Length: 322
Image 1 (cartoon, rainbow, N blue to C red):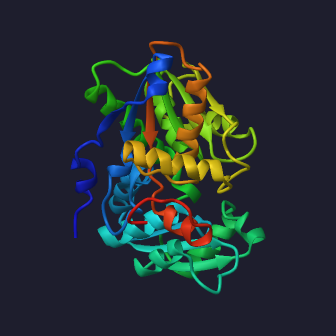
Image 2: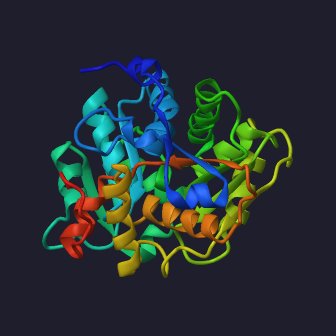
Image 3: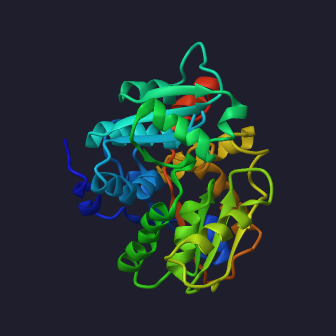
């Protein structure tokens, strides 16, 4: 069994330059920070931004003497799968509080979590909304005893700290800091970490995987509450044009793009987060959104474990091994 130090001693994920006719026509360069290649433990769950978000949290749990991790998520949650994988890899007991009733047949994410030893407790959607209330959490402590609590999606100050490391790594890997940084946005933790670490030195653009315009407020709140954020400097925004109808929603053109992207660049994308990021990014590049001479850095945040569940429900993502 590896020790937690392996998460801190692992080589940085590579930065890869993409080549495409569209990029040449628009006079921009595009790099991909391939965090999906950060992997440890069983399967593809402890990967990408889940690695980043859990890294310092796992160390904090170990330092506090906690041997159990408890967290929340939906039936297809990348975070649930990542916590389960981390538990198996590093010797933590894990508990997942799952939104909704237990399905008759478990999907690939829940099967994986159970196979990793995670105890799953299903609660109604109305009760799940109370997960941050003190009385709800006290009941969980009475039921399970002591545990280290991880929020849904894994975003907290330690998660933001882990995601800030992305910027430091890229600064070491490239001769110049890219002018524009792009990533998918779900809970906002990864994007907040990037914005905080950039500290106004480059523009940041998030691509919302959810419907609605609330994520800018969520990210601002994360930044304001983080001790690592010094002020409100820096140009950043969240684009809400490419969510395809909302979280986990999709259209055939998204799946076609994911498959064509894989064939051309040999980089797998998922249909919930990174597929929407790169689809939107290429649309904006084609529209001339980025000035000529821009150097764009797109962070591949992982999420690959979710492809199996998507294909079981809908099919169509043609990535070998999924």
